[in-house]
Length: 207
Image (cartoon, rainbow, N blue to C red):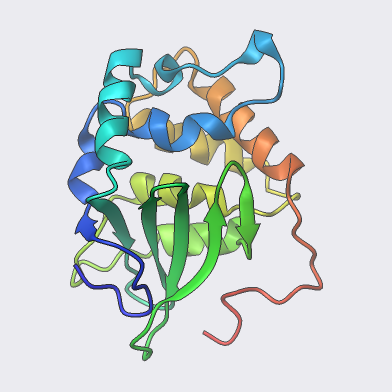
């Protein structure tokens, strides 16, 4: 696979992995922690078990195959999520694709926390809710929202965000008795470490 503007490794389409048990706990569980042992996240929050999560992590972090998750948009910018499985430098890279531009733009990386430019909740939802059936990638809006969630750098999310996130997690297989709590942990963690400043320019500016 070729992503113009990103030449770091052996990229492979990863969208089929979204339906595998263990994917969402691998992708989101690290963003649920608040430092309290009483609230330590577990794969079961996402409808997975430890064996599923461990097995899929071997696929997701394979240095010979870097999974790519494309989130194209019908209008405006889309996104690409790449597992950067470089030995000694593992992380997740986030790119934006812009209408009329050949090359994608890397805006952020996740290596235990986000570095680079993020998105407001409104910007994130705008991309998630605007799938492009004509382009290869993820069309399901719940999965799109969850894939983009690590880019959230907005300390002032609307009250509706928890309900929207809970619905997306439920769609992805999270159990109903804990899904709202899981959504709360995610939002609390992401907004607490938020560095979004309303005066900063958004990576979507000028798109």
